[in-house]
Length: 275
Image (cartoon, rainbow, N blue to C red; front, side):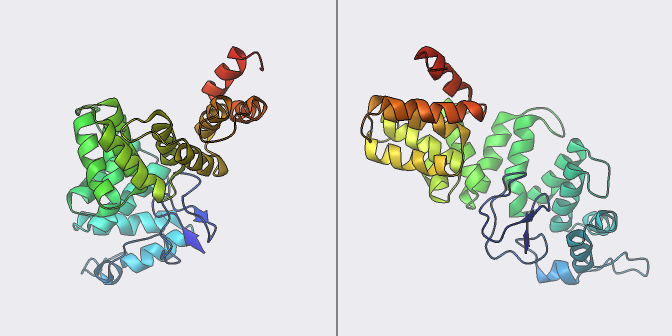
């Protein structure tokens, strides 16, 4: 039994990403929702007679869905400066587990955890700055935290860094770096990045054009059910890029993508009178 390290959702043992929030799954994850639980955190207490419990107690409560009890202990240790407790308390506020759901408060506690070096918090610090949770939108700080998380191996963050470089969002546009980050994320199995890598190979953007690799990466994303990948693989079949040209199969993929809500697929079907 494993749990998502961010939202606490119980996951299948073979899961690579949380189906609820998209967090990468550590295959070494223990039976409580933590990927980086330190022995100091597990054994720590408030040191006073009024202590609500150790971090180990909090994880047991959390895994048993006694979220209120877990949140009280996380808060106690967070107030004492434990960055892991700050991060877990952020999760409670983000998901409304044991406390009232509050994205701004979640963002504030997550940022404290990140600023205190808790690596799992880096990606969410970037996401909060991108979305404006906890304050104003700040794309420059979002990119900085995403890059920090990406350098720490976070597949979601690697894909985000690629997007920032592709769009030139608050930084100088750089297709070569965008592709490099997409590929790193794709190699970890992140479906959106696999689609992006496929597109870049198909267009020769930031990398030498390679139809075979364009198809291979896009098909990996399709196999994971990535809606956007259906529009791309349809185009590859329609144009015969990296695969034998097959307009019928292109339409089949676009129809599946359209059913998943992918707008590009709907547009292609209308364009070719197949909708």
